[in-house]
Image 1: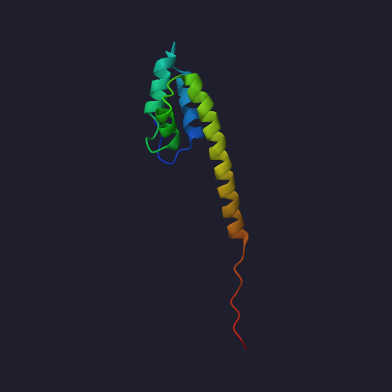
Image 2 (image 1 turned 90 degrees about the horizontal axis):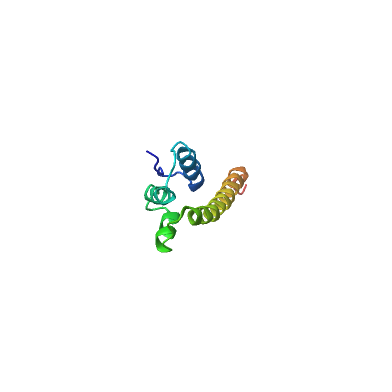
Length: 98
């Protein structure tokens, strides 16, 4: 069963969901959309956005997902750079008066 795991990015979930969808012959798009939404983590902001805006067509979900994935990647990139910079910065050694 395809379900979004805690800590999994939307991009990872969407990619896995899409790959599993191709294995199902003659999928009904309404069922695909409902399944995609129901398998998201309810704490995920994307899930909340879909429910709030009453988005239930796969084409609309895809459009919103792409926007959210871009935000995820930008946020992850900024966080990654900040972490990397923080690890490269050496703390000044405390100097004692002589």
